[in-house]
Image 1 (cartoon, rainbow, N blue to C red):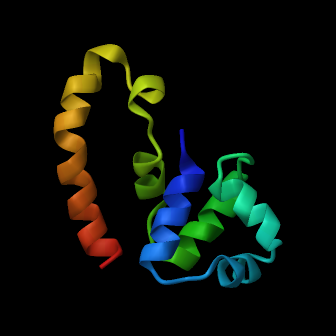
Image 2 (cartoon, rainbow, N blue to C red):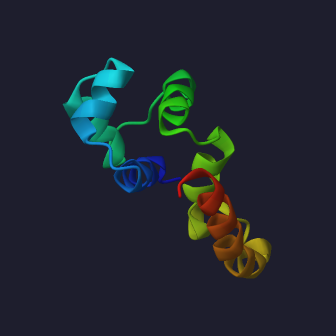
Length: 97
């Protein structure tokens, strides 16, 4: 699961600097950077706080962070590939734009 790169993508779409988000989370910018580079895994409490600040539901962050080859069972991958873009666009249109 690639939560960090998903957090970074949403943060940038919301026009938030890494420093500002880190400050709002009461964590260092370097720690947030490590999270965004998928070098550190945030706790569930921190994920909830990130989602609260980014104004997105946790389930959307988890969905966007899924990796097809690692997180999706092989027999479900084709269906996921077909459905994922539509689901992402719909949720993103509602929560990001």
